[in-house]
Amino acid sequence: MTSHSKNDNRIIGFDGLRVYAILMIVACHTKMFTESAGGVGNSIFFSLSGFLVYYSLKNVKNIKDIGFFYVKRLLRIVPVTWAVLLIIWRMIPGVFSLTDFSTDHSLILNMLFIRGYEHLWFLQHLMLMYLIAPLIWLIYKVIYKAVSKTSLPGIWAYLFPAVLLIIIAVIMKLFLTADVLTMAGNGNHSQFRGWMFILGFATAILGEAFKNEIKIQKHSGVFHALKVFTNVYTVLFFLIFTISVVPIVYEFGYLSVFDNRMVRLACDLVLLFLLSVTKDTFVAKALDCKLLVKLSALSFGIYLWHFFFVSFFVTGNGIHSFIFDLFISICVSMFTYTVVEKNAQKLVRRIGEKRK
Image 1 (cartoon, helix red, strand yellow):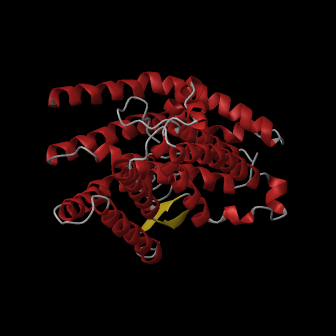
Image 2 (image 1 turned 120 degrees about the horizontal axis):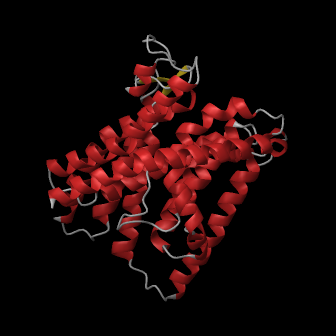
Image 3 (image 1 turned 120 degrees about the vertical axis):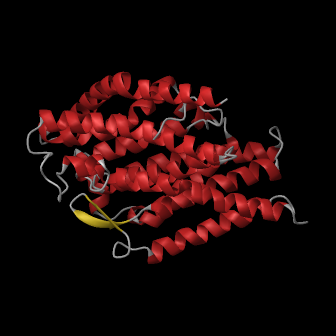
């Protein structure tokens, strides 16, 4: 959920996609939409995180670069997460306990990402994903360099590692179950979602293969047709996934195929690929408006804060609860963004400047 707005590799439309994901999660928790809305949002976040990590590691050359990657991730996640946890601990009794060392209510275990209270389960998966990200990048880079030295066409240097990573993701999905590697949070033990992250990473590689090797002329009929398809696909993506989680539609089984995790993820990955290779489509530009970019910068804070306010806005009307909860979450997220996140980002930039 990290912001990508000041990165040279920034992809137009991703900020709006991130905002859509957080809105779906808030809509799920406030009962405006069904629980599947949360699955839609989380699927986007997991695949998008993997996709963007490819660009974060794209120019890594040595162990110091990998160290800096970890520093950026830690400073992006830990300070604001700890700030929110400590504020909630002091302001809302019963949520976290300083003396609890075994349940999801443990303040210490949540701060160490060992357990996750309710929606904070996501952070356990995210931190472990970032921990293994350089290994994924290393697998990609080794195979890329090996294939590049052969007489095969350049596109195979991308396709071979992408296919291998897809195979690794499938193996993880099938065999790295909760019994093998358990993630304790949200009141249960769940499977590590790293396979979704890896598929996002592999999709970014395929996007690079398309842009660097296929090289369709930007003013050609083929590229124009691809942009039109991207516009149509993006609109249908938002429309179908939003309608599919409306309670009355969900209850009657309409569009139930989109409640399948694999179907959702496949649709997410196609969208990420299309937005990355076409770049300046009409829909992508709409998703890149100033309001959505600003909300995207607050998205991590909104995610951290919103669940703690849900019980205070139980109005019996999901839409009202959604509006109230979202408004308060944006307000407090603006505070933590200004006080914590912006300063953490400045520190990252200073560290980066010293390395040059």
